[in-house]
Picture (cartoon, helix red, strand yellow):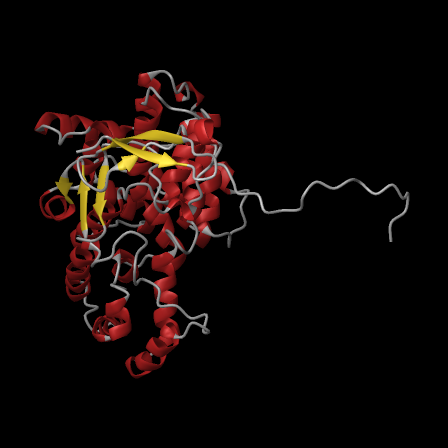
Length: 431
């Protein structure tokens, strides 16, 4: 097998050999870093659709087969046998933890769950009706002002402490965003609870009465967090890596990832699914909206269908679909009209030739929003929950990027199509 590809410039006749690199899975890549130096060309790839921006050992996606692996483990197996804390350890350290390692890691995360009391006053600067994601970006970005003792990115111990702090404090920050939005007092974390149980406790308990975490809700949230923990080089993860390449501190890098996640085309998709279902309203309206979705001249889009990478059924959607049914049934919401509408919409889309031809299958966002709704989590908190789960992946990707010996600051180039050089007008006054 050739380990190089030869590129020839037909205009100058110059040729260059580009080395080919092979990964564990997926298509091989050829290294284009010398094209500009040798041939004076850049490459043009809008949206980085066919460009590998880094080498990584963390997550692999096969979009054609609909497969997702964390450190080599299929997502289906992790969803069935693991838990979020174990997956967090796996993503950070590369291997599943031994029993004692798991216990120690969980204990460390629990002990970092509190945040500085000064951060509580930081929330007061936001309007009560501010979007929780706006608050989260601000609060996470401010962490470096409170925990500057762990911002030396060249110190491995600092990196690990910062990673632990981010994973541990994110549920506390998220719950604070929710409490601020509804005017209720903050609830401190309880180290006797699980990661997701603690988040539910901080969101829904009140100081005046006892709150019991529903194990069904706790398990469902743990599963969703596993599915959302990492997803290769998506927009927010790439943002974290790009910010990190400038040697920014880890708290600033994660805040930048949260900002990217907020976009409706990324983390805001499950929130958009609920709005779409409410717009459709009734099962009998589905054919009309299916037709609108296929009309190129109609701005309406079916949210929660299709994926930038998956050209098959999103493996996470299969897992969360079954959980969605179980949660709504066990919590007494099996007759939820939105779930019935979602099931009918899925069936109609999967039988439609247009959706089959374009491989527009339901993705994980299609069902996760329904589960969040069943758990009593408001729509404006959906992306916040996503950010809590994805922090683990961001941290793992950031740590991998920082440790890369060939790391360089990210600097994409461009194809300039603006005006050619022109001189400033000599006239003193221009009409």
